Amino acid sequence: MSDIRPISLRKRARAGRGPAAVVASVERGAGLAARVYEGIKAEIFDFHLMPGDRFTEAEVAARMQVSRTPVREALYRLESEGYLEVMFRSGWRVRPFDFRMFENLYDLRVVLETAAVRRLCEMTDRPSLDDLKTVWLVAAGERIADGREVAAADEAFHASLVAATGNDEMARIHRDLTERIRIIRRLDFTKEQRVDTTYQEHAKILRAVLQRRSEQAQLLLRSHIEESKAEVRKITLHMLHAARASAA
Image (cartoon, rainbow, N blue to C red):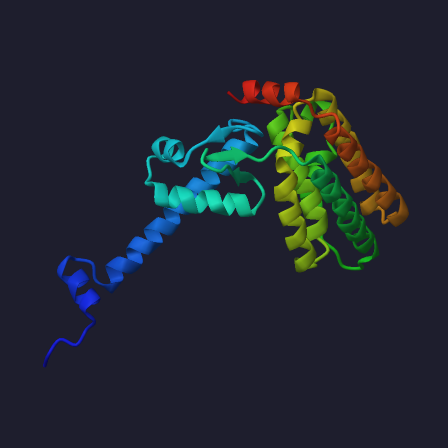
């Protein structure tokens, strides 16, 4: 029987590049692109790459020891998500802060999270929220001191309140929103007084939810988010460089 496979596949098979090998190669490329994507995003969130910083595909490829193809895929993905922008004939740039966008995202947080605590207060059968109590209803000496850890715990607090409602779509939208404001949160928690204030405010919100005091919980949560939103306006270039120095 004659070999009726397409010529391209026959050639690949002879070279050890059959269909399975081609698929494996594609999967490896996708994995590399994902690794580069996560690596660059971490550099942005950890202030190793600052708003306005410029770089080239070649620099990223050399630093991460990969070819330029997965780097290019990762960079265009980050551009589509608003983290980077391509500069004509001069590589890439970390997108400068769009403070109006951040303020709009904080307004959306108010809508989502106040709706979540209202629903939690009304639910007859709801999660215990014990995990939140063990973190936020503690004595001052038992509080987390590291700003980066507090920022992560803060994210978890708000995400847990939304997830506890059982509304998967609300939780999904809230996760996407949280991702987009993460860098602002991390800047916020470089200030020691913000850590103490967050503990105090989270404790009050959580107690109101546990006691099903819906109006108070919503008012406290709204005030808490509005205060964080106000801190966004105070971000300066000095704060950004101080954050980079502390992350080094």
